[in-house]
Image 1: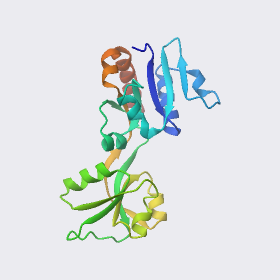
Image 2: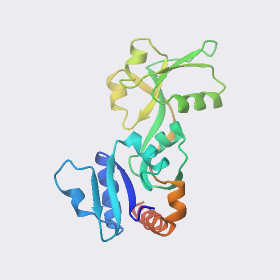
Image 3: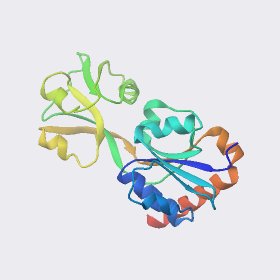
Length: 212
């Protein structure tokens, strides 16, 4: 088994914040801050290896063992249900999964509700719990267009500030799932690299609690 602990970080601002967190708890890798296009960074002394991954792919790298641990949004974990351990809430990248619609929208429960979303499974689960009959329209981007162009009645999407919705004359109908970044681990790695992973979890949990 690889002696290194492999850590998948989500590319972008969130990943940078997560790396800062790891650095503060004693797992630095200075080369990650150099201005280059490298994707993999190692600290030979500590036997840790970081790599940048597209945020939506982190859970796949962890589930399949290419990474021992990683950081993924709760939305990804709920949508794809990867076979991983969710270790702790980093309380970063906070937002909500919400239903939104055109201003003044009233749901006619006699009709099937048309729902446009990237998050098909989350939307299905949510409306199933409401006993609501829906027609899901899977889109990959610009979800806000769907109700404007009458492709859907509502959308299910991540809402942070709600600015994009307001600018497109849409409003939140209901927020139903709080989302934040979670530290996750590969199940087999957790068994074989328990000590270092638990050390990271304990130190990060303490750091998160102190920031609250």
